[in-house]
Length: 227
Image 1 (tube, rainbow, N blue to C red):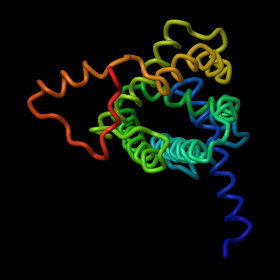
Image 2 (image 1 turned 180 degrees about the horizontal axis):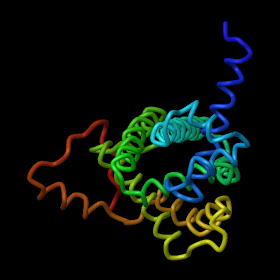
Image 3 (image 1 turned 45 degrees about the vertical axis):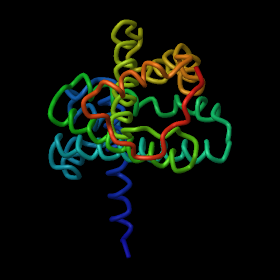
């Protein structure tokens, strides 16, 4: 059984980690241990006591952000399968602004850790996409891994480009960044996901006919559209 001191240490460690996620999201990974400690209301020495180095602190932030995204994506799939309101998720998206900012900073960083972080996101996307297929709320793909990677990188790239072309007046306003992006993007995104884009599958059929090694089908083929 944990002592009161052990519980306090765990709580303090989690608070520092969560504070670091937001500080990294706002300032980038050049943020100092001192600035993170000040945000968390602790000493820099306590941060080092818990994590040992900034690299280890960032590694735990990576793990926490990935775990949170993974859990929320699976909840989204489960909610969709249960026909719950999607707009509840839309309204709650701003609460996850620190996660979005952290992911953007990881892409901008371009380091080995950043590449590994994005690779983990893609791997997780393959998992919960397959869960969505199994739940009957996502159309199966001939190559689930390739589709998951494309969707993940497309979404992250679009958000990064939006922030780059239209930088926020207040970089600290992570919720405002997410709100502006979602307001301009949700309608076209939902149209593409639910109604599609082309009226015929002729281009796909042409592609499958001429590629030398068509991808394998992980699940049953989508129902062909007429036309």
